[in-house]
Length: 150
Image (cartoon, rainbow, N blue to C red; front, side):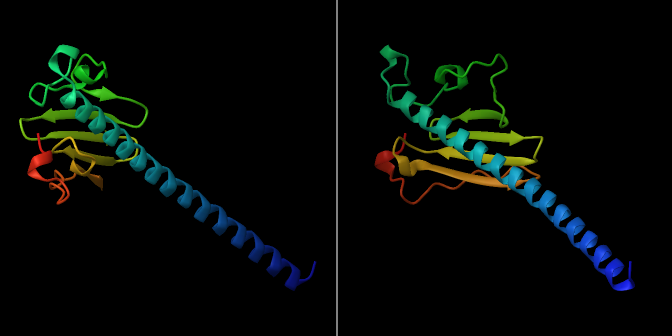
């Protein structure tokens, strides 16, 4: 084999090796992004369930317009310790008289999400995503008017 052929062989191996490394890194980043999207999806689903619970009359097991005392058991997510866990992450809920905050965390991917609900309209849900530390509570969206609030 000539020198030029050996050089081309080594160059080909280096290029293939770099392509494999870049592909592995892209896969890892895509997996982290997909997990963050799944956390947001779960948080918005829980927020939507919280809105439905608030709108439901107390006689039918709802909140009758109030968020006080809302927890995962009220929404049908059963967990003994007051949290909710699925394949995407662990979720906690903090319900006050004016809003509901759902926090999600995936320890496997260091993803965090906060979903806040201020009322029963679709425009009253806001999300915040962060990596490596819990995000601040999202601010109330401008599309959520006082008439739509809890």
